[in-house]
Amino acid sequence: MPPVLHVDLLACQYTRDPVLEQISFTLERGDIACLLGPSGCGKTTALRLIAGFETPSKGSIRINEQIMSQVGAVVPPEKRQVGMVFQDYALFPHLNIADNIAFGLHPLEHKARVQRVQEMLETVGLAGRAHAFPHELSGGQQQRVALARALAPKPALLLLDEPFSNLDVELREKLATEVREIIKHEGITALMVTHDQHEAFAMADWVGVMHQGHIQQWDTAYNVYHRPSNRFVADFVGMGAFLRGQVMSSRQVKIELGVQTGIIPTQCGAEQCDECWNGCKVRVLIRPDDVIHDDQSTMQAKIIKKTFRGAEFLYTLELGSGAQILSLVPSHHDHAIGENIGIRLAIDHVVAYPEEGE
Image 1: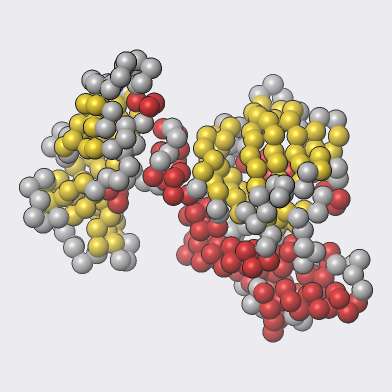
Image 2 (image 1 turned 30 degrees about the vertical axis):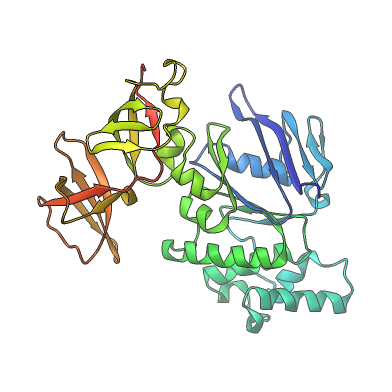
């Protein structure tokens, strides 16, 4: 089966500085993907290009094998079979919820239109609010209406532009999970852009981390977190700290907290070292979930900061060298700032990058 979306070497340039530089990716039918990155990385421009609101300076976009965009030729948005969920919902305030959802269903006969609207109201959990107006709904309910309106015409591709940014932080991840279930239920292929990794992880099968107009890594959320392809991805996704280390072999690296065993990534210096890379100086990524609180451990660290998160404390720990690491600890282990606690490492994936100059 051909891919629903194929983006090939897509580039966009408004002035001398490019906004996007040769990004490529493919979405198969039913995939949900996310372009994740900080403001100004090019993710929203990529979405606008796919929607047909912008013209690329290089590359092409295909939807269901039909060319939608290339240099000098752009199919207008309304002819792309693309649904769009905007950041501000863009609901019509003078129309009730049913009429908002029905807005893109004019080609259908009246009976079929009414039936589809009812189906979508039930799908998004708003079956009893058909005659309400947008201002009578909460932000989360308005987002569901916007989603229902975009899904109602059964688009080939659904695009979501920072869809949860106007919602309370505690509601975002919950709604992202619900929206994912709705999209999967409808069998729609979707692409979202966001700067929030929690939304990306809750929604997407595939995550493309963007920086300065490039996709730095296109992978599963698990691999983006545990096997980041470069230092930017490691820094941007999740929390963590980097400790100085020295590569001992292709499977071992020595840090202040002991020798860690795993597959040492080739970017640690394979070009400079002939075989086992022995002696290369690196920085090893330590995630908060890699550091386990263990009262029986002889390895000690001093608590210098603590943040209560309900079920957990996030401790900032200082090692003997003065280097700092983070640790997530169940909140019934309530220790004081300045106290030394026992720790041990449980690193499943060694993530290391060469020291500058190595």
